[in-house]
Figure 1 (cartoon, rainbow, N blue to C red):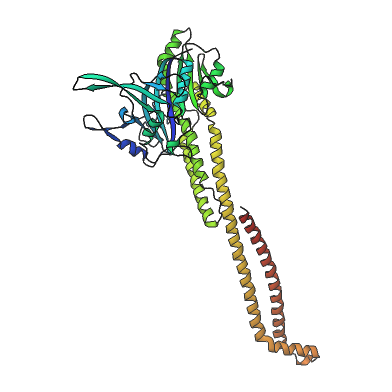
Figure 2: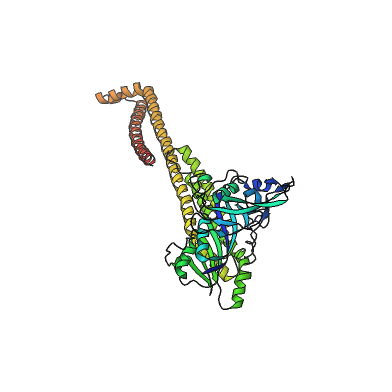
Length: 484
């Protein structure tokens, strides 16, 4: 089975530093003529069949709709690439070396803080197994044995002769050279860039001479960017979308590739040889890039959300976390409004491919996880803050009840001291039967004295009950808070 042509793009997801765009825009090199030249220039992802409002979001304009800036490499020599692809080969750690063309490099810098490092390449005239082996190891940056090799022609002006000198650089070395242009960038792993082990994503197009006999099994491998030697399971329900009679999309978390093959129809073959590569690098690439960005933007936000988790609970800290969680909810709302969309095109099969990418990358699941995480953080912080506020209100009420009791006791004491003498004489006359000695004023004073004493006893008893209830509520709420 021959691969007539393979076009591919390898994407390394990164978290960009603060002024990534400024760093790329200002990067310069000195040419062999002693002049400064810009290393990168502004670029864009072209597309023509998207609905109004979407076409320009990836680097097209400086308007408010743009969600990413795109910078394309202008000077190949600064990252160790040969000036042209003559004699260039990729040498994987296992399997045969293959002739390859490195056709471009770009950075896509999204406003979410996600960056994608894109390496474009082409291969042709290979056995399908060799092409699959190459793409598998082109996405393995951790092993120094995966490298590029070529011979550079060196001209000696004294002898006026040229000689060939071998040159090579590893995939890892190239990756670190590129990321050096983004100071402060990080990968999506809990490890430094120098120790990166995660595989990047592959976006590809295989144009085959014929349909493979075991296509369903191979499609599962192609979807996951596995070598042909891996025994893939036929799972077309999950990894396969038939776009045309002789064209399929194969996708998973690892990759999205189109596999098309020649048939006995010259017009169809002409379309896939000439027109389809343009659509693959415009419309379909636009959909793929947005899908990848959606996934990694959610992962970035989930990482930030994880930093809001707190093991020590106190009101001040939880209040801060509540505010930060509410800000995160606003940021997530903005992300969803600007970067998530449905039905991007007026062309039906373009929308079908986008829906397929969304399904294979599990974008609805990632988005649901983000929504649940944000709302959960707000709920926890809000519950704690409200509980502490309720405790504070109850403690204030307890202090009020105590103050009321003290005031009642002081008032009663003053009243008793003021009227004690008269009340005592009146009560003594009543007890000894000398009713004639009890005057109207004495009776009033005595009644006031008795009423005051009775009121104090009732108020003190009532306030004690209220205070006990408040203490029980406070202790219960505090026990719930410390249980967190």
